[in-house]
Image 1 (cartoon, rainbow, N blue to C red):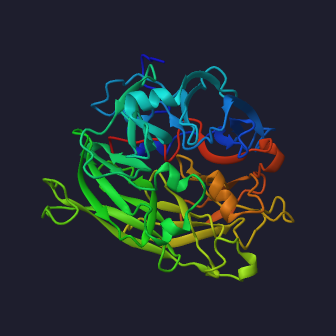
Image 2 (cartoon, helix red, strand yellow):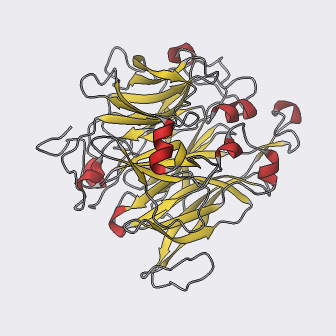
Length: 482
């Protein structure tokens, strides 16, 4: 666990990370919707020169049923090289895997046999609730001083949701991260600008709001999350909250610039209740403006944050007969932005439109004026577009979770969102598939890899969600040097 020299998969800067070797394995969270079989971590061969390329080459079953594995991450990453990091000689070895339904956390060791991770620790729901006051762990990020875990629920109540911290080396639950949360109640994703002492968090809903699918009454009533929170990372206190407008429901995934000199990032909004469109927004610092305006708790000494919409994706008209019951009254397919991802060089933003079955690529060299440079269709509520490797197979689901290689040349997508939401939008079954996309990093553009399409029985009847790449990826690591 402790090294005399830094882990070779850690990079001090995003510029250095771009030179990292290509990943040879991908770890994929697989879950059983019926909760009668254990969830698992599937291991995929991503080496195009390997005889088992695109095959499942490893499989680790977990000991319980009903977990619904979600956004897992590494115990340590490049943030360990930050000047203030107390553990510079930890290694990227363990996967921290949350069960969103069960509230359990698992620790899997990948070191001795990367193709067959070994379960070495289980953190029961009762421990997370007792020590941190949280339940329903959702997302893992490796920080310089510990392992950060977002959670949707309170320990013995619906909320507030928030962030728990685990110890880097023992994986013991230290407690809740927040010292002063203000009026923050709903939780979802979080990330940070480490060199600026800023943490950003987003909102989805409490466990009962998301457990059985999207609730039309809550959606029309504009009760799901619609705010972005900005925290003082060092003081662990809420400083500013920006309301996007309650018509913009569910700002979910947060992707800050990797360049530590920058103070901007992107957030995807699932839908607008006014027209079913989806959108992407940029948060950015307004230097020298700290006016104490509405939404600012204490104010920043060096300027407040603003959040501005930069991408609009409209709903697509559709015949009522082709729509699931939840969408028939609207006569349209919403894009449903459920994930976004930003390349390590901060140049390309990928946006998954799970409803329409589309992955969009934007050049965000000018982050305030994204320019669409590519799009690929797979699945979709109406389109059911096939993969070229299996051209007669109509796909359900759509590009959902997105992961980018460190050099930006490869993008991986999986197709399941959350069990009950899958069933609601794809009532005939969502299946299981994973695709790889090759990227033109010079001018933009994407091409499906026809050799990479694990699907169906490859995943033993389980659905697939989050992907992590061996050695790190675009959404796993943070950097303190440019």
